[in-house]
Image (cartoon, rainbow, N blue to C red; front, side, top):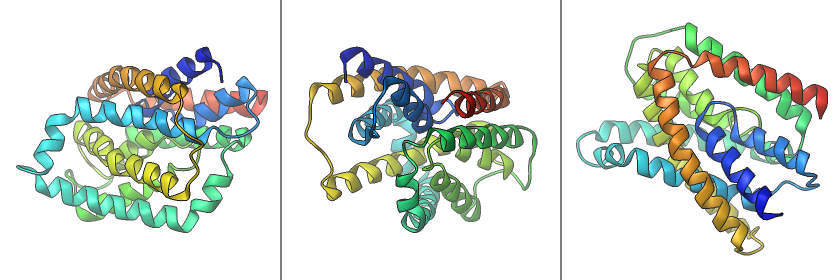
Length: 246
């Protein structure tokens, strides 16, 4: 992998991890265009660690509050994480085998687009988070392990559909990403799949972190302005393009 490919991958990850357009799906498509024959799973994990660092930076106060004044949110995150873990344990092998399948990614991008549009305009239930809502959001995050399904898009849209206030939905989604990304990283280490650290991982990490901070702030403003569905139209167009061109 060349230095330019590393930087481009970091930029794509930083933008797409938080904007609801599926970072894994875009990385699969990008690496397909780069001509990689095998999924770059090790490198992709470091890109995700970079965007995880962006969450810590942007939501540092919210993270502190989970352990002090807003412990109930911490409980909801635990419930949602358990739901995600259940999904991954049941369907994990099938999901891992789907990486590298650009046609599947295209179809899932279209599904993400529809999901975003529904979440933007349909509301079901009262406002505020509950244990049941948290569990359903966690299942949505598990589904988003399929490449082409946006994690932020799935969790935020599900929360909005269930009546959660937009900004709270976004904050919960990104706080929920912390245990998910850490869990994926630790699982990969346990599996012994890393081929070793190299400069590409470091450059990719810092690039995705810096771009991720900017993307996070952009998405929060987009949600506040009730324009999340715009990303739905983009995902549908990107999905159709992937099905036709790749």
